Image (cartoon, rainbow, N blue to C red; front, side, top):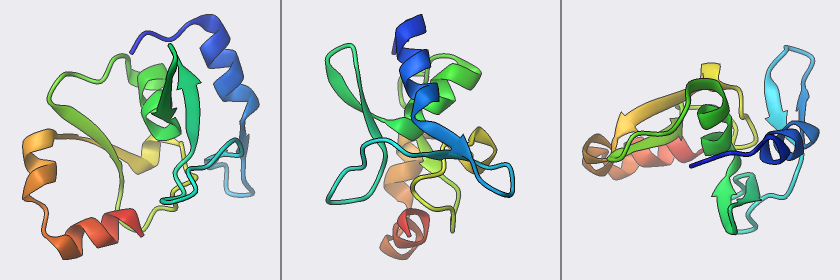
Length: 102
């Protein structure tokens, strides 16, 4: 995903640091799953994916960005995110996915 300076500014304007110093999303949240979303290049994009791209560069093909287990969905702090191969993501059990998404 190619991010413009404007995209990064809009992302930053929709984040804040909580009392523990964790970066959190304060912008639009998906009503069905609760994840932060923002428009980038005409597409709604998950805020945690944008955070990863800002911090680490493009997300490689075949990989996805996940919140670590137990991390709330509004967290966009890359210390609490993992880059995992799509193949590994598909191998998670329902219980593991539920823990990741909770």
